[in-house]
Length: 246
Length: 210
Image 1 (cartoon, one colour):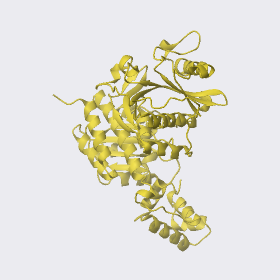
Image 2 (cartoon, one colour; image 1 turned 30 degrees about the vertical axis):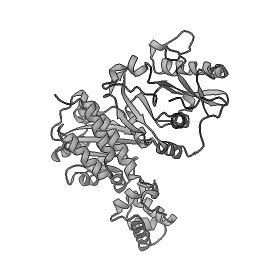
Image 3 (cartoon, rainbow over the protein chains, first blue to last red; image 1 turned 120 degrees about the horizontal axis):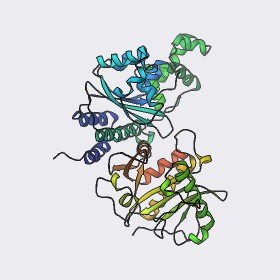
Image 4 (cartoon, rainbow over the protein chains, first blue to last red; image 1 turned 135 degrees about the vertical axis):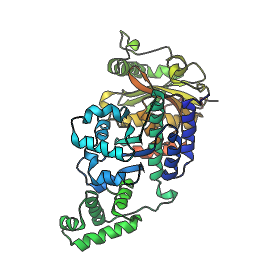
């Protein structure tokens, strides 16, 4: 006899508790949902409209999509046209992507996002809208070439998405006392990073802060060092996570 | 301040309880449309409001602005009697586990959007403070699944008791949520206030669980 889905959900919650890193947690999740046909997961807080693409990408908390997809997604500016994003900011009930087809039937740009996702084995999907403790809207998507979900499975994925998102937030907010040094940015460094998050180049940041391009670069280099970031996206992501910029 | 009202001190809270029944009626009958709870006198009271129930009242300047009811799981409770379809496992029955019901915040004291308001977080903190000093370490909740993420972020250890189902048109899931000192620390950090939310009224019953 098949195990009851509620028992399976219980077991999964407890294995999620044991995962010590966001990486382990999401590997564990993917292994668990593979048996239902899910191939990838993608989740994050929905950025406010109008922010730069680097900052958009930094809002991603979980990315287990096929290689190349999320780079393409943000570079092409798909977030602003993605009909799943539009749907989850207006309605808190989970949905299959096929159910929102009427939303983008007449919208070629939105349709292109969905078609291109199909090229990355994200032809079908299920998205769970979430709201964080501080009131930010977030989304958790399960993707696959083909996804066939019973109402019970939808309920289970709804619970699992909420749990994994919550644990991922908790794990990525490790307080300083538990291993990470607190980081202090100077006001100029914070300002430069805030502009970088808005997608400005070093030259533009220099102009906005009435300093040279070289001066802007110096501030950002110092930020990277303090945050242990290897790239600008990583620095922005880390600073957002630590609440150093908004 | 959160005031705890039980059979022992109910006489001192006659007026506040009266306000609480009316708040419940406004929120659950008039706003949420749970019409089977409607009463012509505008006071929402049911069979579970007996001598075993523990009421928590958020009172500001003499006015009840928030309310919740705790029921022992060692006796019949909402999940076992009224919402049993939500429970697919053996329902919890323990002196250390109580059921959280009738959570209500007065309209003017809610936050815009869907964030936990100051009154709401004081009520939740009230449960954890009360629980930690009374030997209660988990609560049973029937809730919109949107609450799950919040509970996990607040360091509650959540156990599903069933899968989500629509109840009166709203997706509802039953869970048990365990808490400890870390939960209280997290709640206090979120509130930006480390003071106790419980009023230190004389005669407040302690150690409800044996």
